[in-house]
Image 1: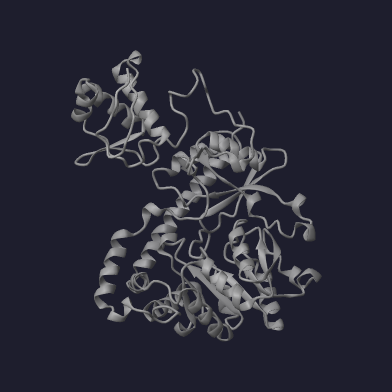
Image 2: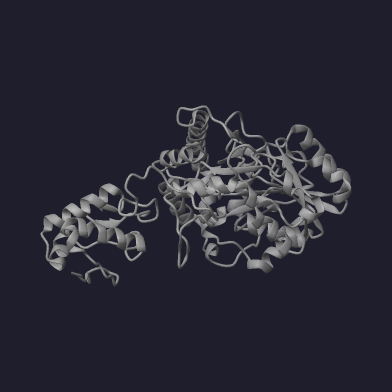
Length: 499
């Protein structure tokens, strides 16, 4: 017997198999509708009374089915707003309807790591656990403090905040940033030399246009950033990285003679996690000063240091040859779309002109809000609270991997955990490879990112380093919510445990 359900806000065909019993059949039909996407995350279900009438069953039968799916995490029941499909329902591990009897764990498919995620017609389907790097815990965005700052800022803002403005950005934010960066990061910043951009990507694109020529960029790094600089017209020359940061000494070598600019992450290299060694800092300063070259300092998460006070920005030692690039993406969230560059005098005019031609100006309302957020010290309070929270997460990650479910850890080493929101699990040659780890993780409902996709492959023939590149997994311990993080670690431990 097939029933038709027409009371939802979407067209949905719900097949209830009477052979399984009314309650069990309804549970199975709802699971299938959620799993297939016919019931989308957040969709509101009809009341138990309405659905009972639609299906011709007792109201208690519907209530029992709802209760079971709530217990399984497929549905969420909220007093006053009814029953809805959970945000991650149907996107995780196979449930009891699909798991074979007696199954004790997932079977990893034999396919490359890049294809381990289940797919839908719209692309990859998210898994329930996510330890990929790149974002902070978005659930901890300071909504109330931000809203208060927005109200104060808009009440005090002049009418021109709603019109066209200076391509450099709102002066309120540039002044607030000059004070904040000098106080917390040791940056020598004049508000007149600060340009607000809509993210590090735009900042690098503008610099690529203005600087041109050959630009050395760390390798591994973010492939998108390499591509952005190339697309802006510059030649990218990969600069190897080790446990002491960028290999600055290579800049004096034959392959780097044409390089006039280098992009580095000295406070916490992405993705290796190393901090640029003091001797290399000095060598980089001398390289830039002697050759009248430029250093672009990507200080993407410099506020988060756990073993000592945050390492000061390199820009403070060479402000006339360093472009300081900072962002709110790791402290607040990428959706804020605000970043900033502190520019030396010779670059200010060309970058401002490039910014004007790119988009004229970044949005203004977020700028005045962030300015007020900084000036009120709510930004400091938020960062201090975040630093404590992420340190606890880092410590828990290290402890869980150290014991690995009660057994001594083997087959990998954990590094890059002194700072930032990510760590690097280096895989030993005798253990599992990247593809095997990522594939195995997907079987446990966990999304991971391998180190292999972060190397610059464009110059492999020239540098011949592919065979020597270590394998590893980049773990973003800042990304999950507080509630989701322990479960994500459980999946990571199972992934790395030989069984």
